[in-house]
Length: 115
Length: 117
Image (tube, rainbow over all chains, first blue to last red; front, side, top):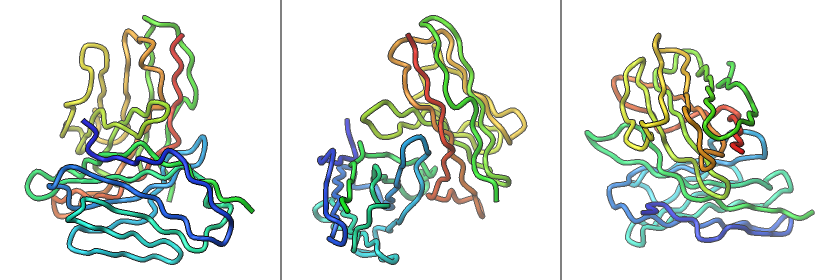
């Protein structure tokens, strides 16, 4: 049962254009969402997050949008740079008294930004 | 601030052999996680420690996998005996805990790539 899904295994964009990475989830108890970036032979690094009480969070070139009714979030990168080429993972976590900080990850999307 | 350290970085073993991975979390981080990442998939939590106690080991194959964090700092994950399907990257992560609440942001080590032949 895949609770967090990234349906696009790969995405290719031109440098300077917008990159949009998508993520869907099924568990309505998730209330915190994160994006991680992973380069080859390295561990994932935290990129940006959003709480379910918000619908947008922005950090420099990176913006995450959350649509709770659709159980969908997206990561926008504007403008895209060649150094952004990596695997991006969407992750979700639960809430309330059962919160243990446990993250459920999607399968990842490989972004390639062409010069 | 030093990051999460893991060793070895790579390991090749034959099926039915045993293997152990080591992790040293960021100093002061009470929570430690072990994940398994199979090629083409996202990381899957195997076990979570809070200090030296287990918080969640529901997805740990306990017939062959074991983990410990005896002094609440570094941790060891062991597989015995290994199967072909254990080939994966094993990631260790840590996070801080404040006022009894778990922080969502986790810091990952570089991982250990295990190949079982």
